[in-house]
Length: 178
Image (cartoon, rainbow, N blue to C red; front, side):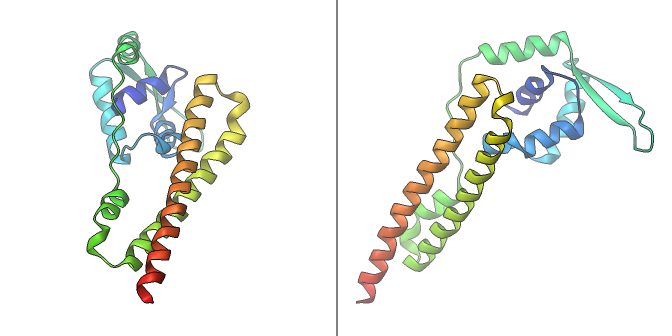
């Protein structure tokens, strides 16, 4: 999966502006897929050159004109090829987990600080995703619901594990002070 696959997928429902695509990447997709803002517009331009999408300049009164992108038949074929290709294994790239793994080389107090920071961040992510789920659940396809529920349960499991690890590290810190 790459940004092109995701963009083609969102254009399967309706035409979108580049801004709309960017908003999806920053909103709901940010929980499951990481892509930088700087890749979206070059990717749209490349996809247009390859005939996967078309661009229409829409004139707006009182606002700047906007480009609306629509998937082509070739783009639909490309997207269906992606959907029917073997599922890639998930990859986890986490600075937090790497630092935690090497936590033996720093004091327990720093490891505890990392755990507390990860706990706060993960709780924030869980709260935001749960809120979006509550707002959009009734409009979602069952596959969307499953996707969001997996994300919510993963955040809850991560929080539980961080909580347990934090308790162990704080106990270890107390024992070392005695």
